[in-house]
Length: 121
Image (tube, rainbow, N blue to C red):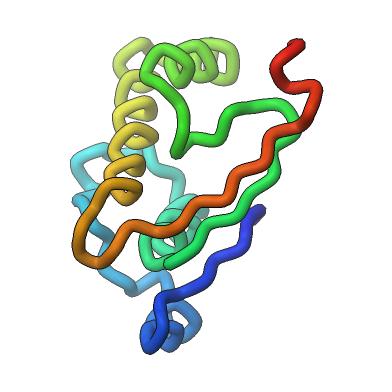
């Protein structure tokens, strides 16, 4: 798991105590197997964080991807998957972005660093 998850003041026990049981802001089951079980923990922590900090060497992170970028990534990463499965994965990725504009709880602060050579690739 990459990134650092900082919980809002007074909520750290929820993140550290039982992150898997933490309710998520939207329904996972609607996306079926588009959400791997290992990823549920990551998104649970992400949705509870007050601050998100990341460094990425080669890809725009999922929280900042456009639909077209995410579709291209999934076409390359999952060539054997059906178009429907890839589109469900894209929808999951885009739905995660709603935490960046939420009002309650307050949206997390995002600190993102991309590799200096990123733009030239």
